Amino acid sequence: MTPSKTQPVSEPVPSAPTRRPGVQSVDRAFAALGALQHSSIPLSVQDVARNSGLDRTVAHRLLKTLSAHKMVNEERGAYQLGPMTVLMAARYTESFLVRRLALPYMVDLQSRDLAHSSATVNLSIVVDDVSAVLERIWTPSTPLDLVLSSGDLFPVDRTATGRSILAYLDEDIVESILGPERHAQARPALQRVRTNGGIAVSEGEAIPGVRALAAAVLTKDGSPVASIGISSPDPDLPLTPESAVAAKLVRSAHAVGKMLA
Image: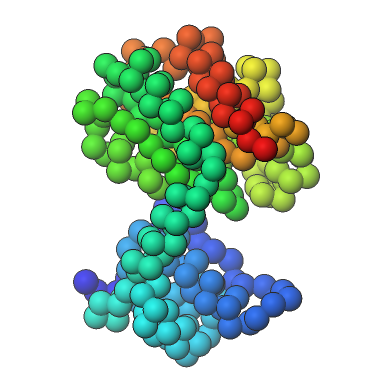
């Protein structure tokens, strides 16, 4: 596999690392990892240096060190995230209490309400300005490309799960996540979440042709910690805020939230 010469335009490019309190070498290592995280293809040292704002020599040393710890893989001068990142992510997922509490409700939604559909049920969280899937359930009739894409990262303001969480955050926090321009564009959709009783909708903004509903899991003080969502490419599936499955989705998310300390 040969190294890439350009960063794919469809992927967000991380900004150059800013000086902050802490250990500079650790900041630089995370900048290099961030460059790899935001790319769907392996990158050369030059690509990583350019996309992370690091000096090429520094990037090269960091990548060699990260490779020795299996945080990145190298093949013919091209780098991508390594298996150790999978183990760390799996440990975080396994220890995430909301996942353990939400799984029975997700299984119930899939088996009782969506068993004969192509829909997926997923649990997502917000990380920086993206919506990340922690868990997903699907049926044999679910298209494979939808199952695979469910693990991708999407702009938080374009997904139903992301919108359902943003709608319950303070306005200044939402603006710090999205920036002023994206916040202004997202504000009407976030207001609709609140007027729809907590149901967020996505009409193909994240994945073309895929509609989605989501409801946030709220703690007792009203803070959103995750979101349960339903996604489907089936135009006949009634994924609307007024549907029976939407009402059950909200009840499920509320039930999970009530069990949180």
